[in-house]
Length: 257
Image (cartoon, rainbow, N blue to C red; front, side, top):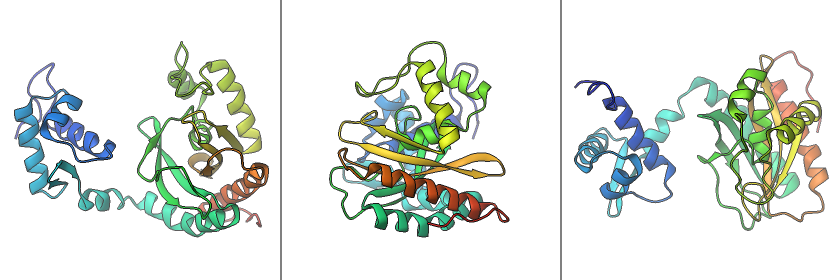
């Protein structure tokens, strides 16, 4: 099959990825009409791509449409770097949730967002949805800001651009100069808080995870706002971020909890 339909037309790979990405981003199965509208591709093209992906086991066809399959999740989980990161982080995430009662999560940078790759639900978690597999905005979440603090000056300039950032709530920091100041503080303290900047009723605390001198992940906890122990939670999160960094970099001194 051809990988291009000529200048100005999406390649076959582009169309396949567009369909997969749309299905992965949806919280429900998508019909061919849904996918055509979301991708901008003709319905005939979407039908052909979906049924081929279903044949290959990357999409599943259910009564209400198409959704990503378990095989696609398994393929994504085979990244050696990600597998090591997740394996090392899981005991620490369980420990973090046990100490705070909040939901704990691990995120990595992916396509300009914070991709949640692991999550442990806390015993006190009430209102927040499950976030594993979600792409969270970098500038409006604690775990996203932790990742954003690892950007170089050039990368940060490209991300921030000229104008205000997208507001998700009234609390979202949209001014690039204010966000730069916050990121400078995060690099010093290694911990960040964000309350209701992404969604009403969501508060988070996150810390940085380094490997080879670079920020490779962020670890954090999230819950509804109002917990008076949030400062104590921030200490726990900072320690877990440091311990995960130590585990990824043999030879560094392990920080005790």
